[in-house]
Length: 320
Image (cartoon, rainbow, N blue to C red; front, side, top):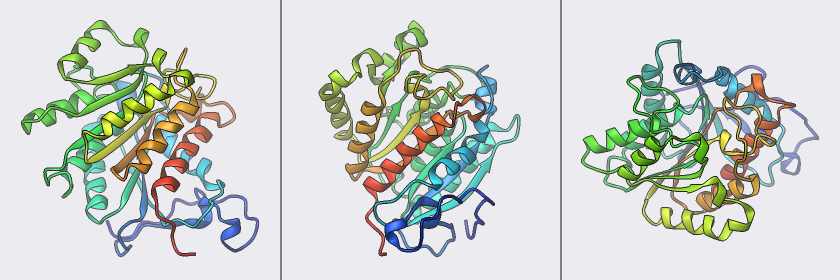
């Protein structure tokens, strides 16, 4: 990648005046170019409905990256950060696999240039594209232990013939097996009624660690923290992927499959804090925002807060 123009209108919002004391995302954001010094945060959009469509879900997630940019734009920053927008990878109908490969190439290039990558989905098929980038980057190929932490109501380990939003972690497991490794995969927030017995069996056979949503309430926070800490000890590089349907429908209504129960936002935010501060986070992706199904941009605002939290907690302050 060389130079990317900012998407017109995506990064505009309230302006209270000049100076770092009035800083917001839209005023900190710049278009990505290849000469950026290492250590920046780079956003990449993944405009895809194809995985959800193939999985017989409700389409609309292709509009997610735009909605996330708008939701982030006016958020206030406590300190300057170096953040850049690398534009979107757009997925045409019937061409999901090509889109995932192209996203992987972009992510790998950004990681090799020394940046932190946040991918704005798109359906949860985005996770496999992010994985391709991390696993084929120089760091991923160096022998470092990769770990994938999924905040999700679903395992997404389906054994369907065609890739879709329900297959990304089975695809990862297959790719790791080809390298002679087990996928280091943990899931927090699994909803038992939303996963068949066959999926639980497959998860066990693949060595997947998981916590049910029943065990992720605020009263269970110490156990959740221990689960995340134990996972982090097994990985050198972490891919954090957040499917917004892990949250209660009252908090995140704008998803293909809203949660009847869900994990409280306080718990999800705490998990993000722990991972961001670990020093191991390489890639973040946010999946399943469907603006067509959202109410008052509630889901987009919640997702933007999580992105904001991760980026600002992990990033060293930029010089004002």
